Length: 370
Ligand SMILES: Cc1cc2nc3c(=O)[nH]c(=O)nc-3n(C[C@H](O)[C@H](O)[C@H](O)COP(=O)(O)OP(=O)(O)OC[C@H]3O[C@@H](n4cnc5c(N)ncnc54)[C@H](O)[C@@H]3O)c2cc1C
Image (tube, protein in one colour):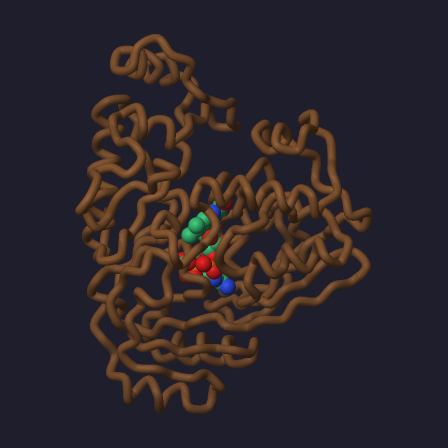
């Protein structure tokens, strides 16, 4: 999804407007410092540390017609070098609460803290989603998933502020249109997630292990379960090996995670795509999996086979593919948003030219287009 900005709203006006909301308003904040890609120009930022402040801030800005960008962990955002002309509402609520049947987290709670606390409290279910950066409230936005589990499978309900009607209510998963890395929340400005609630396993066992690499790492057959803590450790190890756990010292993690989603090709195009791949790379086994809408190919495999190997295009380019994982576009320290986008275009167009598949970006792009 691409979010467009309009003209810059004067800081003084915003400060006065939000005076009674409980938000802390800051001027000319470099958004690079609030995103894991570490790119993005300046904006006025309203930090909201309570649910009340968050609701009052969004309602006030909406009533005044000022464009809002919701930002929590900044791990799925690519913000342009021009920054954002409206107000960035930074969701910094923190609460996490357990009941007998699961966990409720405020939107700004760090996701991995929710997972770690669940495992430590003797609950199973979320362990495959260990180590994913960002906030609890963003997890339903793109139906966050990893190692064979998606949040949609465990989510009991989501507390939403409806920005059109002003209503606050709990919504059930069937209202949220979940799909692979998407939901109705990802393609709309309509709602703010205020809290999420997950049903967990009280026996402390993991979800059934459905991902071959993870099952193998645990010496388990696919479909078996293991103690949730063991699975969490294994997931964190596997993720770290791919640069998929944030580490400020490691530029391979200065990313938005996977930059492209795995493309789903309609069944009627499968033979054509396979022929294009065979023509370019020869007769090899192509990783592909059945999916509801057709056949899902591996974006990372396609990128690598299209000629964009790990670390592409090499030193001294400021934006490069991760040296650990071709699917992550990384900032080597001095990249701009435009550098990131230029690399993304090169990779996307190269894959399209060779294999006839158009890769779609996973992060939300703000103020620019791919
Ligand atoms: C190293 C790395 C590894 C990753 N691995 C994975 C992975 O394995 N699986 C996966 O699915 N993702 C992965 N991601 C992507 C990212 O971590 C997730 O999408 C995460 O849920 C984003 O959370 P956030 O709080 O950082 O969202 P942000 O980047 O702050 O926001 C993302 C989008 O959600 C919107 N949003 C945020 N909070 C709310 C809210 N409360 N209500 C409504 N809208 C909101 C924003 O406006 C924006 O459009 C990875 C990212 C990185 C950097």
